[in-house]
Structure formats: structure tokens, C-alpha cells
Image 1 (cartoon, helix red, strand yellow):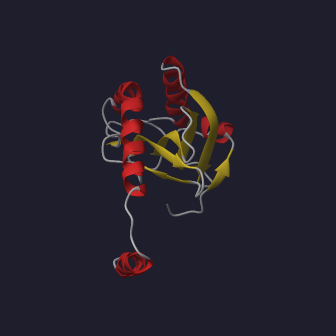
Image 2 (cartoon, rainbow, N blue to C red):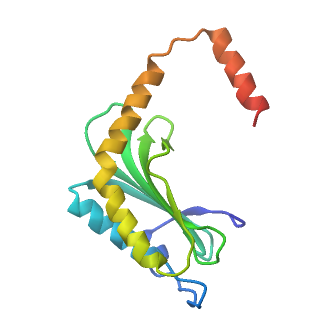
Length: 172
């Protein structure tokens, strides 16, 4: 994203001026996305623990994260996230994942990721895909918890750990 992205209130995204739709550009409004996500979370009996929104100064690019109160894992929380833009720099994307409490980061596998260019009936497809993702959320999150547990069961020495860090660093 070309401009610095900072935390904002939901109202900043909801009230952002919409770009004009054209024959080749379909607006997927931040407001439509947020409202659809919140409706689907409620319909699927998920409770939002907290929301986080970020955007560029002009709200042309936005990111939203919903950390959900689901189960009682000591390390993880279920999370739903989206990205969107009004200036054609980012395709709409949405995914479920796991929010990692200790590091304030998140992890996603390759099951829940979806991206859509702003063309045709992208706004309706977006709503349909969000609903579909919600129906698979528990299974997907549970698979991430299993992956976390499998990683925790791997024992490596400090030397092996250092070697891996060096490899990751050298490979960017």
C-alpha cells in the first residue's frame, strides 16, 4: 500500500466516499463488506471479541480483522479478515484464520483464502463467498489448531533452530 496505513474506527471505512462504478469496475464498498461479515457472523452464532480496522489516509485501501470469541484455546482465537480497495490496487480478499495472542499476529492455511477483482457481479459474489466461508469456519479453524499442536510437538535443538533462522533470513 503506497500510503501509511493506520488504525481507524469502523465509521471511517463505512463513511468513506465511494468511487464511481463503470462498465469495467464494480464497487465493493467497505460498508457492504463489514455489514455482510457482521450479519453472517451473527447468523452462524459467532461473537466478535474485538474488531480492528486499518486504512490509508483517504480510505482507498482498507483492512479489517474480526477476532472471535470461539472455544478456549490458550494461544489462539478464531479470526476473520478482509482487504479491499477503491482504487483498483488490491483485489477484495477474505479469509478465516487464527489470531495468535502472544504475538498479535495471525496464521492462515490455504483453505480459506479468496480474492475477487472488482468486476461484473463482484459485490454479490463477495456476499455469497463470505456466507460460504462462515459455514466452513469451525472445521477450518480446528484444522489450524491441529497444525499448531503438531508444530508444538516438534522438538529441535538450539543449533537446529539457529540454522533455520539463518536459512529463513537468507531467503527473505
